[in-house]
Amino acid sequence: MTTQFKEQKTEIFTKAPQIALSLTPDSSQLHGYGYDEASRVLAVEFATSHEDSTYFYLDVPPTTFEELTAAKSKGSFIIRAIKPHFAYRRESKPGKEVEAA
Image 1 (cartoon, rainbow, N blue to C red):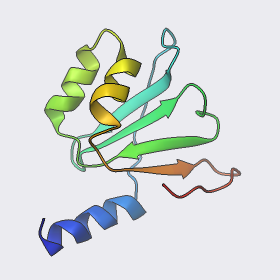
Image 2: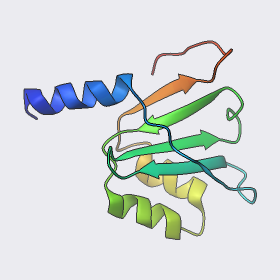
Image 3: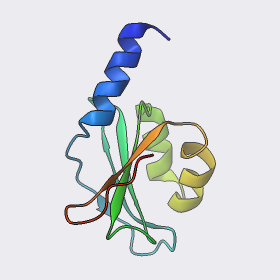
């Protein structure tokens, strides 16, 4: 990993893009998810914490997002294919306590 790439990744950590979420009312694990292709950031709100925070997974390839979109169980896909493989930042919503990832 080059220094330039590390700096770019740090920038993504400090400035999460505004990402519209697709809600997942049939999921017991997810409240919603969205993707910004330009920054390759996947935003996820889990069912248990969606009122408090959003998780931003970094450097997620478009093909991985397409696989998520096509997955029968989006929550299981995120737990299996996203969480263990991509760096993330948890951001608290306004008025909620900030927690570092």
